[in-house]
Structure formats: structure tokens, C-alpha cells
Length: 134
Image (cartoon, rainbow, N blue to C red; front, side, top):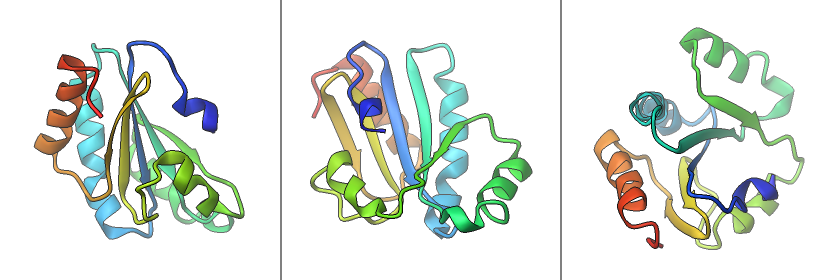
């Protein structure tokens, strides 16, 4: 997974860390679906990084995604020590969910809170207009 954060082109990568047991995560999920449609013709890629517990994904994550018929790319962090990823994502991250990392090359914006659609698109637009944002 670490190599996902080391892309070196002009594409903007948006990684949202979430889980189906996290109410604010579920509330903001449609924001990412809407934003993915809005940026479909732009060099913007979305990856929803699920921190659901692997033992229950059939009854939580898979059912949630099937019910939404979501087109977002979703990966599950299937690591017994998920906490080791916190500093790799962002040293300022407390580990709270939801959290969003927006990255273009080595430039990043990190948000450790739920986002609304306007805040999210403003952050992405900052990266498009000024890719040197940190």
C-alpha cells in the first residue's frame, strides 16, 4: 500500500480512510461518489480505504457497497496492526476516522474530519490550480 502514496505524475489522488462502523464516514461517502462523477474527465483518482474489520466484511462492507451500487474503487486494509499505517499516511493523523489525503506528486493536503462537498472540491481545486499546496 505504501507505493500508492508515491505516485509521481500530475494526477491528483484522493484517499479516504473510512469504515462502515463510522457514522460520519457513512454520511460523507456520497460526497466522494458525487465528487468522483464531477472530476470524471479530470486527472483525479479516488480510492476509498476501508478500515473495516476483515472478519465481518461480508456483513458490513460488501453489503454496504452492493446496496449503494458504488462505482468508487475500494480497498480493505487487511493488516492485523492497522495502526502502523497512521504515520505512513500522515504523521499528524491521530488515527480518527474519517480522514482524507489528497496528493499530487509530493504535494499533499490532509483532512482529519468529515468533509462536505464544497470543502472537498475546494481542496481538490487548490491542488489543480496550485499543485505546490501542502
